[in-house]
Image 1: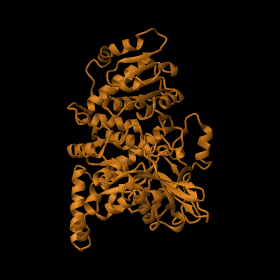
Image 2 (image 1 turned 180 degrees about the horizontal axis):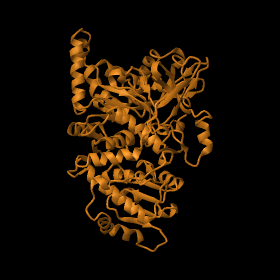
Image 3 (image 1 turned 90 degrees about the vertical axis):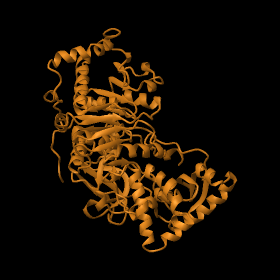
Length: 556
């Protein structure tokens, strides 16, 4: 097993110095562009502020807001100071976010002003100050040094900065903390589907493992372009839309809006990124709303049945899809959740340059990845060189078992929760992922579903509801679904695609008949022990985590 024994903060020192004049950050729709030198200067200002506030290495700083330039500077300024950043997903409700801020022992909070209006400072007694991400205004403070103490530090920061850097801030002035590789860099609270969040402690060594792999894989490179639309507070977006790009000299455009397909495709066309990092939901929506209506037309169906003609049609669809994503990318990396099998098979058939990776917050996040040209359909890549994997099964290549991993990217543990840490990390250092899958040649992993959602049939067969849901979600007028056990059989809870129904002139009164047809078609595609007895309709979307995973425990 390989180890990347580099000084991760030293990587950023070199990147900011070497890429000083290159563009680093902008926000989509803004004309302001910060180069690497200006980002380094703002980080140095933040370091000076922390020093005057008495922040020590290892102290916790919470960060709550949508993707923005100031969000990135706060994150990078905190870890390069040697303090611990606690990114909080903006989609958490105020009660849960306040719990996370308190549980993490954060003493400072940087927050979007619009979000702060719903918070209660009195309920977060350990905070010394709350500062607006947009205006740098002090929103609340309790330092014990009199009202206005923090505000005075901020107002005098420019004068203080000029006195420290009398000849101006230059590349040689970029100097970041010297830290123990096992010190905690990030406490990332999961948005899991089990009903509560856990604080994942990611060390500087964990960050190094992900960042150096990204650099050596040339996922980003000096002068490349990235569109960051995944939440940076989540480990996946954080690593590959921010940490790796800033280590290589990439120009990042931050997309702070909700990434609907329409808005996102417009941004991709404008930015023309060299790498696209996304979750399956985005590609699945584009497939269902744009590709399926095209390939299901009668004339197109006939044409696809003709040899050579089908190849030309698929090539045309591929080219249109590549152009839609900006036309300049090496590949689209899909992660964060399983990709629908039908969508994957179609993308593979048309030779769209995509690959599926696998990771989890507890590994910061990457566990496995393969470049698109080597991607094996149905898999989620090869285990990383700095990680090990195994499957707890008598026949790991064909009989699914729980996937276990260990190595450089594996977390230190859950913050202030040693009991739960011991439940998932065994005495040999293996992290039990809770994912069921198989392991092929060279550590190639294929995931079947979650251990906790697996259903044991009456005949003793393992049923993975995610596999059945993937088939049902491709059927007419199904927006999303959940397979649950009711009595001795399976029930599918379905949230219909009302938008598609309206477009096709389908009445709600027709849904029962349509869904019964779907049920019969579905049962023709699954094993006998996986057959669904009943479809139950729900008028509302399923309640989801901030990562947009369904909270299954609410429906079991």
